[in-house]
Length: 208
Image (cartoon, rainbow, N blue to C red):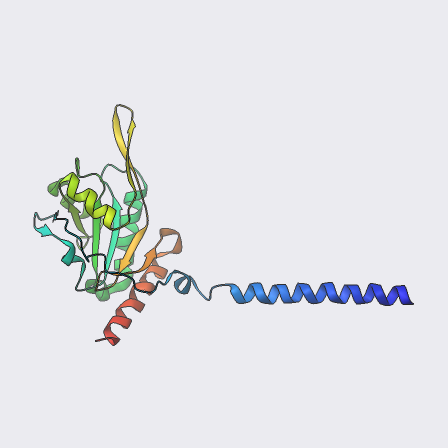
């Protein structure tokens, strides 16, 4: 009987530990994708920046243009075969999901390949997805400064007698003070991104 009691006691301890582990791990799981990706506002990405770029209409685009309303930024280049058009299609879908609320944000496409992506090229390219998406390009040195300030990795890769661009694919969501508030990812689904933007719009409306 003594041996039987020890076996039972051991099994009870093991079962108890397993239940506690399940409870703890469950408690650590994020409540939702939105909660996991929310970020406390940090420094303004326009603060101290000095770069000068051009939008797809040839108008100056400077750090202060990242302020005034929430901004979504996609990084890429027009010669990109897959990920960049996929990201822009995703952003266009998010804008559609938002309906009229989509007009309250500033959707941008910043090139990582200013040597080939001229103002005219950017204008034609963004219009393929949604006319509200604003292309931004500029002189290579100014573009490099802007991308570095926004935390974007870029590298030119030689291939097949030409070149391609290796770059960060993260989509940034900035608040109206150009502070990073979240990131968007195409694997999340357009409805998730739309909810993140809606939450930011509501929060900003409540702060005024």
